[in-house]
Image 1 (cartoon, rainbow, N blue to C red):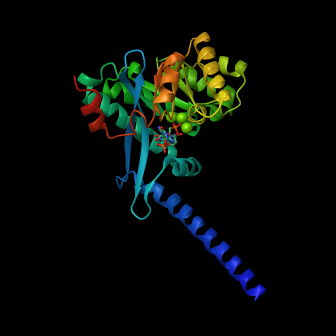
Image 2 (image 1 turned 180 degrees about the horizontal axis):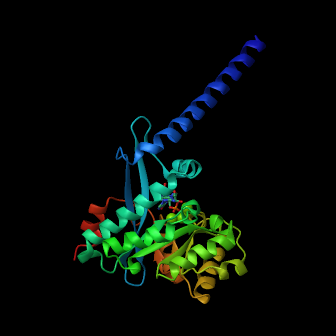
Image 3 (image 1 turned 45 degrees about the vertical axis):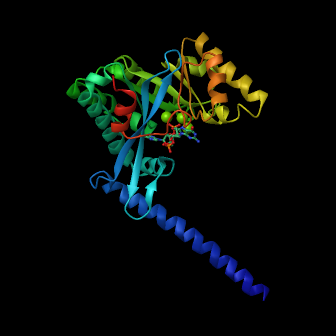
Length: 276
Ligand code: C2E
Ligand code: MG
Ligand code: MG
Ligand code: MG
């Protein structure tokens, strides 16, 4: 009897593993044609400037509607796209789409910023900076309308190389934000070498604000430090009024999160927040 159970366990385990593995393999294969099949789209999450209480920016977040598996989160497929190299093409498409939106709605979006997540694989691709430049020029977009987000942990890998790449972008006027700040264990001296203009406090700290004094202290310290270094600060993952009040009281510049709005389609963003 015991033997039988053991065998079933092994069976279950390998079945489960096979399922995960075959999904992964399917995603790897299907990524290649996801763009041409028009399975990808972008949502925008409003970023609110606290001093004016206005939505003055939005983060572009990619979505993949897979024909078999349904909606797949970027948390799952971006990593795969980095392995297969598809991230370069996908990343370029995102920049193109965002610039297209900015051009089409330039009357409403003149002073609006779109924040675009950039993978270091994309950043380190040969012609990244030139392609970026071309897209901006083709659409007649000012670099003021674009911000780039790079996660802290990934920025810290390959520091020297990344600094050069980032400087190429900032020399053109593109602003850079450090995403998921506080999770990457970067040292201050490293941070100071980077040509950044904004710090984005990771949502894990915002999430913990109500539960621990320690996280309050951490968030306060990040805000003060950033301001002392001349950076703007935005908090991500703001879900409650209490969190919002805390951030407002401690002079955080912007907030983003479900409390204010989930990521939404461009049309809705225009209708709801850029309609004056
Ligand atoms: P991220 O850049 O840190 O984006 C924030 C994530 O938190 C988004 O998840 C967003 O939908 C989610 N979020 C926003 N507000 C809240 C909130 O109040 N509570 C909670 N719990 N979550 C909130 P999403 O869209 O699933 O993206 C996950 C990650 O995938 C992003 O993290 C980013 O690293 C990556 N990603 C998304 N779009 C792109 C892209 O176009 N290019 C690249 N390279 N990476 C992307
Ligand atoms: Mg981001
Ligand atoms: Mg983030
Ligand atoms: Mg994050």
